[in-house]
Image (cartoon, rainbow, N blue to C red; front, top):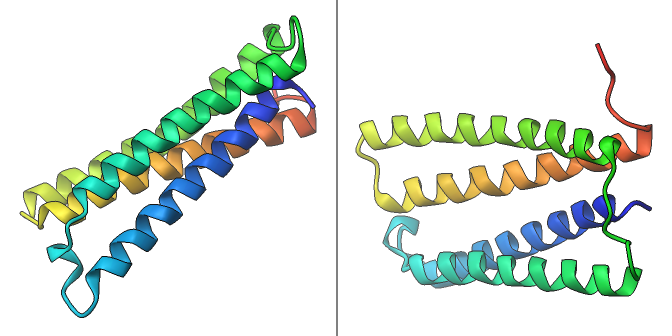
Amino acid sequence: MAFEEKRAWVMIVVTVGAYAIYVATVLSRAGDAPLADVAYAGALLWTIGGAIVTAIVAHIAMAIAGGHGADRTDERDREINHVSERIGQSVVVIGALAVLIMAIAELHHFWIANAVYLAFVLSAVLSSFAKIMAYRQGGFQTW
């Protein structure tokens, strides 16, 4: 398995895990109160920060375990990374448009913040999934 494919798997696991922890934390705090009244900011920031630190540590550990040159990339790796990142960014654009509409509609900050977080989560998962599929299928179709 290519180093970049391993990184994509780590990104999926870390992203989904952090988001699941965040959702569980917010839902457990809600009780019978409306979700918009839940104190979410701390949990949001801690799960995002924790995911970033966890991903960095995992990538460093993979590079060390792989030995010298394990994290080298070639033209194929760079092309796969480029295309998969563009695929993931499309979700961020859609999420930004949704958040813009939510802000214009003057929805509660809770919903806007959670829509942004969900857009980032979906972007990371879709980008990583596209990268994994490209490695499994031998790259992307050239037109």
